[in-house]
Structure formats: C-alpha cells, structure tokens
Image (cartoon, rainbow, N blue to C red; front, side):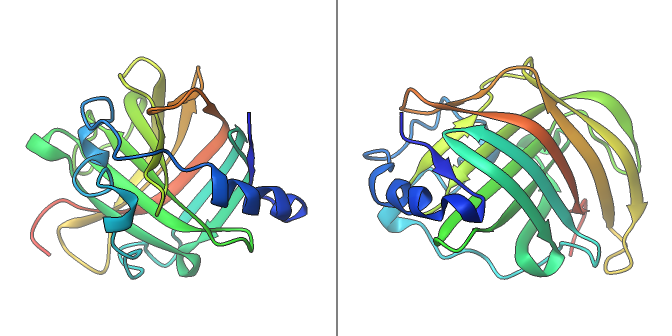
Length: 204
C-alpha cells in the first residue's frame, strides 16, 4: 500500500502519492457523511480552488498526527489555513472545516469535524463525531461512516468578536478505529487531533 507522507523528510514519497494515489471517478456520496458531500464529492476535475482564509479566528488551530495512507504531522495556524464553521444540514449540531497545504509537495488536505450534539454556547465531552479527511483535487476521502468511531471533547465555546452569531469552538477529537478510504482499501489512523475555529450559528 502506497503511503502519503506529510512531514518534510518524506516529501519525495508524498510527491509520488500525489501522482498515483487518486481514486477514479466520483466518491459515493451515500457512504460519506452529508457534511462532506455538498461540493467535495464531485469529480476531481470539477473541484473548486481552496477557499480564501475566513472564520479561523486569530488563534485558529489545526494540530493532528496521522499515520497510514496519510502519514505525518499537521500544525496549522490561522494564517496557514482556510476555515468554515456552520450548523450541520438539518440544523443538528455543527460542522467545522479546515483546509491547507501539507509539506512542500503541493498536497492539499481538508478536515471536516461534524458534531451533531453541539449547540450554541455549550461544551461537552464524548460528543459523537464524524471525521472526514479529503485529499483535495483528487476526490480521495477517508472517513468514519457512523457516530460510533469518533468523539469530541469540546473544551470551550466563547463568543467571537467578529460576529454576534459566532462562537470560537475548541476541542479534541478521539477515534478508536482508523478512518476507512471511500472506494479504496487503505485507511488513516488518528493519533492526535486538536482544533480551534469559529462556528457561525446565525446570519453573517
């Protein structure tokens, strides 16, 4: 199984994956959480460019340790990534999306944290969570297909200065099993996952 390395010492390997690891065709949207299917499950040739950095908050953060098909360390601050945070489809909880580049190879990744049990102004422990990782531009997905694999401890949710309807949400995600590749036979395991971003609960 070909591995994609994120850390700089393995840039050559990562470049190889960037050329050879894409899934053919569009991913099956009924397998991936609805939070990841609004635009990113289209064929890779139709994927839009990464959004401009918004809604990360001044102290925005994505810190993750991955191994398996994607392997290495992610350490993104606000200025190095794009962020989105909004209510989930149907108004059940919230989802946060973080996107950025990994290493010097041009690999672009997006992480979607969907937390159905999160409400405005609340915190919580062991909140059932769907975590999706997207290798952008290639239509390659890794994700938990139900709410039994991952959970989030939301340590804080504070009002954001930028918008009266927004909150800065910080937490950690824990997964007890690897995230399986959609339309593939590989997986990604999560050793560490911490985030901080803004959820806009109402009109912007």
